[in-house]
Length: 293
Image (tube, rainbow, N blue to C red; front, side, top):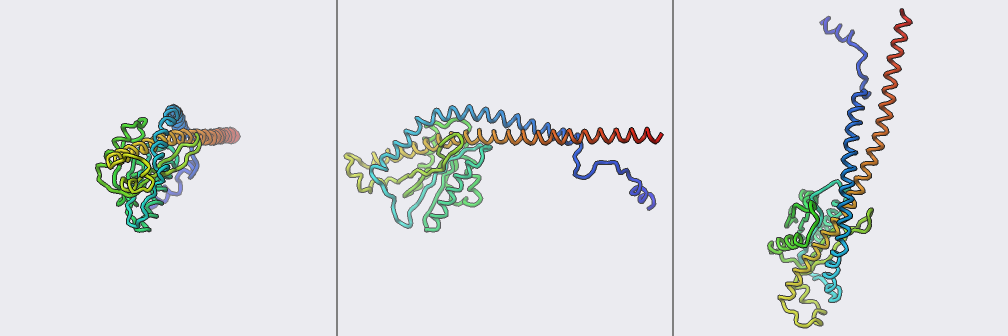
């Protein structure tokens, strides 16, 4: 009993004060932040190179999207007003993160449309292009997921990739009345906008009043055009989304590098102050000991 008491009474009081970092702790954290800054700077350089290439490839790809929508606009195709209409939403994202909230904006747009159509009693199914989008929707809207496409964003998207996605979608056999391709449209290096481009079923296109002005359009021609337009819009969305993602990642990594610089400056100041305090304390102890002699 007395041994335990004496151990408590005469325990040394010169240890580390609670919540007070030592020089070793500060050095370890400072080294860690510097390593993180090296990574963010490297990722910014890689994203800048990929962004430059994606921006060059975006202008030719926009022709596909504009051309696919030209017939819909000139024929003034209107979707069915039936309350039991089936809707298809194709969300375009990627498998990679560290690019701000660019994927969450597509997820929010899809969630809003699901809520709107579900409230009206309409069936809604979603195709997730990119694993990040599936992660956002799987827990809360898992019953609405029709197809999930992975391995998106590692390489620049091609027309073949869009064709494979469209083929898998058509093989699902889901008959929809109206749909939309939702993606992030590139505006500038620091801005993008979430947009939705319409999709129409073959029946909706064939029943349009203004389709009669086009001669020699049979069911096979309409089906081929509808499938080709689907591929074009998916390809258009992939290109726009990729360019927006790389610009957002470049901006995010630049901000992360600046934040790391601020933290390094603060830690360096704290390290110098702590070191100076330790040196001052040791000098006081030496002087006090010499005066006692």
